[in-house]
Image 1 (spheres, helix red, strand yellow):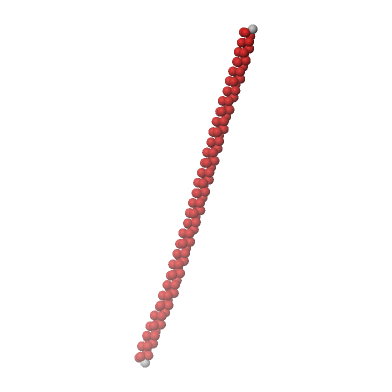
Image 2 (tube, rainbow, N blue to C red; image 1 turned 120 degrees about the horizontal axis):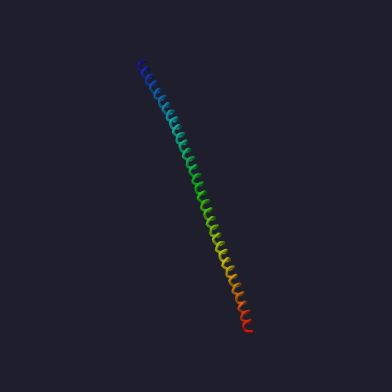
Length: 120
């Protein structure tokens, strides 16, 4: 019976070890799952932050592109206004020349008339 008692004691010890190992395994599974959940949450946050950053960079890029386009349009408009001003100046010069030519023609007619009168 002593032998039987020893065997029962050993059996109880083995069963206790088995339960302990089983509990450790369950604890490890829970710990692993928690760690995995934490990592997934962290990665999800990083992805979300990267998406926000990407959107902000796209907005910044689009704003810069829009600003450049607007600046180019303003520059082109300024160049056109300068060309228009140049043309207006040229037209004014031509009108002045036309008036001068008319004055000279009138003077010439007067001279011709005076000359004819003097020759008579």
